[in-house]
Image 1 (tube, helix red, strand yellow):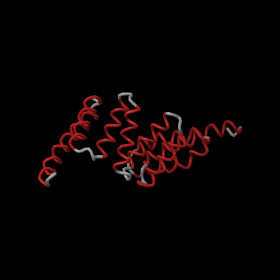
Image 2 (cartoon, rainbow, N blue to C red; image 1 turned 135 degrees about the vertical axis):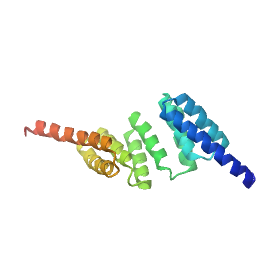
Image 3 (tube, rainbow, N blue to C red; image 1 turned 120 degrees about the vertical axis):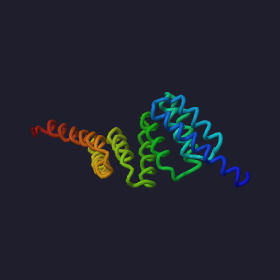
Image 4 (spheres, helix red, strand yellow; image 1 turned 45 degrees about the vertical axis):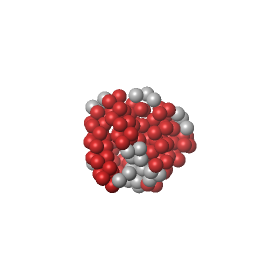
Amino acid sequence: MSPSTYAIREPIANDILSSANAKYKNRDYLGALTAYTEAIRIDPTNALAICCRGVAYYRLGDDRDAMADYNQAISIDPKLAIAYYRRGFLHYLAQDYPSAIADYNKSIELKPDFALAYSNRGYAYRDLYGEQEALIDWRFAAKLFKEQGNITKYQSTMRSIDRIYDDASCASGML
């Protein structure tokens, strides 16, 4: 393919991706899926577009195709942290906690300030090992959420932490 062909493809693909992202934001998941698929047709090596299409599949209830897209995105770009995070989430939903933790670990390795990955890994730790194992990740996620200005997620994470301490206090008779 000639350099001029690449120059033409990129703006078109970017326009389609912008449209797909807007449709996704408006909860038009089917429209987003169609637009992501078109962007991928134009540029089949765009790992982020493939990952985003996976999210659209997930929102439409198609976990199998979502997983296939996350795997494909990772094979194209093994440094795409969000793809590992998304795949980890599907593993978590399938109650495959060791695989979820492995994917969250990889996303954190690639993006050390990925607050959602710490938070979700905490849930996987909780379900696999118990709540006390989740606390370290939840505390760190809360710190990151606060630093990043995501007050809603910070407060939600702090409520999860508070529930553990409240339950522990009740269980030990320390009211």
